[in-house]
Image (cartoon, rainbow, N blue to C red; front, side):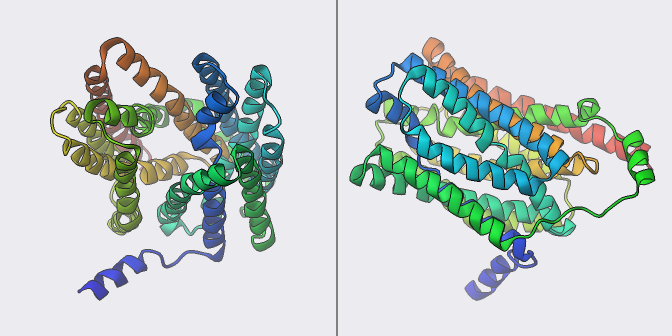
Length: 409
């Protein structure tokens, strides 16, 4: 029985091209090397002695750079190709990280953080477009899930390795290792993966496509869907912004106990996300429906935190959030890509990735602001209500897409 279950699980990893496996390896190396980010606010506060306000402004510059980088990466992927953008982004980011350790002034760090994230986050939409090119149409969502597994494993390994480096070498070591892993990752990609372009089309076909192509800014279902994506991001990022503080203040939990809850999240995703995605793809279940259910589960997970007298509720909440994450993230990405007309994939994925950059900024600012004025209970009630709003927006998107399909028949 165990052997049969293992075989079924491994079958979900079959059918990928060589390029997808190399891209997964590159993503793992890159994310495992992303050690500066988890310790960035600590480094700015304790080593460079900035005030909380100054740290906040540097993080705002970080988020703003991320949003502009996402947009630029998508736009340029359509213009000059994802391959060049990926190589430029990671190679330049690696070299920039070597330099960043020597910048210690407030203005210098605001500017350098902004520029670094502009270049670094050009990689994300370009990578999503590459998945669309190198993966077969029938397993694109699974290919994305495979890359997400690499990201999760990398993020699990990175902070632990980062902690060891800080203890033995100091913060300077983080910049050298993070920069080096960016460069190593993209060199592997450049040496092992050849640039692949879409099929050539005639000038007449191109003119016809341009005439019939709808601007991304006029794609109403896509924008309604994006709002639900921003909300799902705001709810999910509570795991890393307000929730660790709540664990300590409400239940007097240690960092280890908070870490174990996040580890449970990672392990469940590793073992369950690929089979779930495989099942949904085989049964051709509506992707927006999966995202909509996921948003509702996220809202429920936030409402569960209103029960603040039993520590076990944190485990139940994490179970709901983990399943929500497995429903929302792979399928939201897949739906966004499916909306993109030929030649506009980068633009669509840029706006999609920008929605999560915005969520990252809003999650901490809104959550901390509510807690500061009205307390944790008000924050969980607000976030839970946001989840219900995202659920309603998902249903609206499904109806619009369904109407579109009927009109196009």
